[in-house]
Image 1 (tube, rainbow, N blue to C red):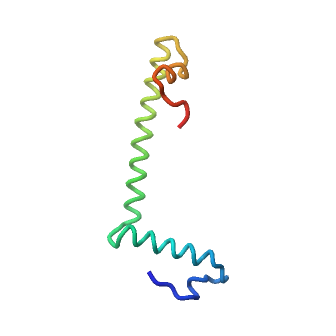
Image 2: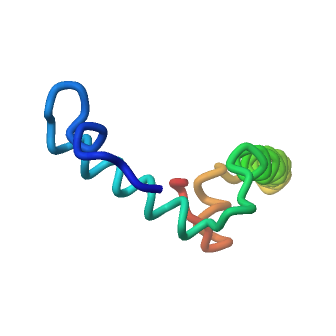
Length: 86
């Protein structure tokens, strides 16, 4: 992608616009001509949705285990060496 000097400077003559347009061109070149940005975003959304469903199910099981063993969820996380933060 090639920009004219006026395009690169933007409507306000801001050099930051030039930097951002160069970054866009670099990323487009890196992704290739057959890249569909919308498809990539949709794939990421699907993967995040799947991850969240698995995580929610896991947390529910940890909660049930904590109740059965009279432990706190925090104690179960520590027992299983699981992170308490995301």
